[in-house]
Image (tube, rainbow, N blue to C red; front, side):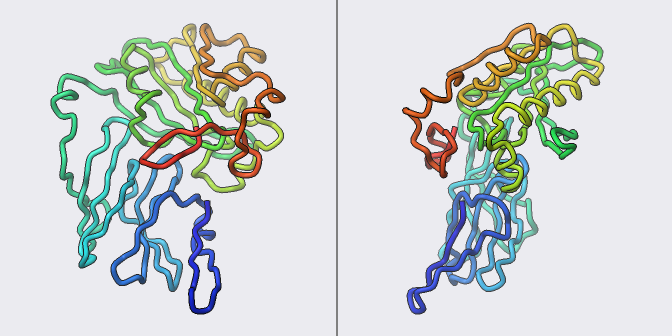
Amino acid sequence: MRLFLYDRKTREHKNIFEAADRSVDSYEWAPDSRSLYVTFEDKGQEPLARLDIATMKLTPLVMSGTSADVDVSRDGAFLVFSKMDLSHAANLFRLNLSSAAGTAIQLTQMNLDVLKEIEFGEVSSFEFRGWNSETVQAWQIKPPQFDANKKYPLLLLMHGGPENAFDNLFHYRWNAQLFAAAGYVVIEPSFHGSSGFGLKFMDSIKGQWGGAPYEDDMIAVDTALEWPYIDATRIAAAGGSYGGYMANWIEGHTDRFRAIVSHDGLFDLTTMLYSTDFVGGGQCRSSKARHGKIRKL
């Protein structure tokens, strides 16, 4: 998703986000019209950054979690935006633009009464060498009251899309914390084809939806099996939409999983052809609302 600037005097279009090699998600003008405040997927996060129009320099402001709904004060002194992560639902934050990056102040405590009785599991990011020996990022979510001396079953989650990713956000349907709360160590690899890692990484699965992502998923499981607290005899996999496609693919290629969940899993590309909307030049996607916009599943 590129961002273009149209000069009404010269009638010229200028591509101002291509160099980032990321899909722009949202954008908001600074009051002086010299820069934009943008959000975009990047390696499992959704950062907030300032984009200088003259130089096209991208300056990070908030790097962790998922930022959205950006609004700028009239004097340009501060931003208000929403932010969430794998352990926190969305709240509003304020960032004084004279402050250092990452010093946003939380303004709201939405759902505090609902969440105060809930314990969330520890979240961490890990990387491994996947298909073609290229780096793949993934999340690990441990169960609440995790005990490193115990053994836990492993659950591999697979995202939809395929041009999507497991970002650091609080998902309101396939919430990793909910799976972990049942006693699983959950892993969420953003396998090849995922967004937020550059166009080459995303395009690498065209014509082979099962190949590279399958290899990434299996290496992710192998990586997790090296952790001493994983019970190698109890491994499960689950996914929805394209994740269901991968669940079906896994079912036909390995017997290492004791249980596989295919939610709305595609198994016939020909019949899928008649119901897809072909958004994005031929990649089969479903639509969902996320952060107030329509996003691919």
